[in-house]
Length: 456
Image: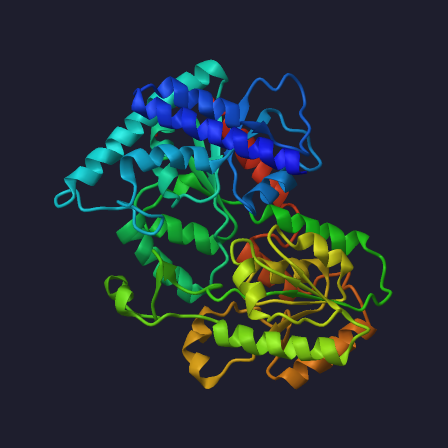
């Protein structure tokens, strides 16, 4: 393991130095070589036929899981390779470092002509890199997982100019109706037009918001659903063990889950985007602290019950720190990665404004939402996902304890989803039938093999 880490670190340094040298010498060929060296074939996907076509994927957690679900049972007709997003960002730094962000990409071309000029220079350089990359390796399509990523905005444009199909499988679709209304305004004022070919989204709310905001045309946006949710549907249909396992699975609450977050700042509902810098910090922190305290007490009072606390990738360190130093022995804290594989161990799931809650619902497990809100949190209610009776809501630590005790004593998977369950899964993740992987696969295949890969 140590040797592998050392080799990986050395290789990353080598790639970074090669990119640095390419800019020093103004030789995009060296950047293309660095990209080629960084490529890795995606694991766990089989291929059918000669696989003459090649799809390059800009890796991101969650998105990779959706892609894996899309090709889990059906061989791909083309080769799929992973390209670390960091190698693209390395080039971005030479042109636009600090000038734009994910949350604020648009600039006023009348007052900030320099930034606009640098965007075009960055795009022109990427065009040359892609041309060399095509010659060295071949590239028929590129797939990203969020169209707001600043380093990939001009890559989409350069790809389209060169005739490379640029796709987005947009994974940031789980939002309340209030949040989507504000997102549309943000898209219009800060994000601008998608320069690639097509966007796949989870749900109709996301599709309509993207179209209304002008990010993409109606023909460019397709609703396919959340492919990785297929796993939960499969689990519900195949896990026949109803024996109590006495395991509570808690997805630790992220402070900003489902809250309006634009370019590093928060704002209240109805507040103008231009005023958001002075707005108060919106957070579920107090809710998270009350829920943590209630579950720590439950663990101490019920030593025969095992609890798994799952952190969110990128936030797990702060989530773990908030739990304190001395934890009961029956608590295991897991960090990073997706947590859907943990559902098979659980008797009951607890979560808040997260895809994990929908995954638990689809798996047929009893799912608890800790509505331990204080009066000070009342203005945040519009940002809570409306789960329409598909979950168990508790409003006090005592109710939470009773719900957990009942669940671990009577583990029971709901084999058939109720209409409420289906409606919630359809609304938020576009997947009430366990076939989103099939839809995502079709979306990608049709784009990779389209007859006229010309610029839009």
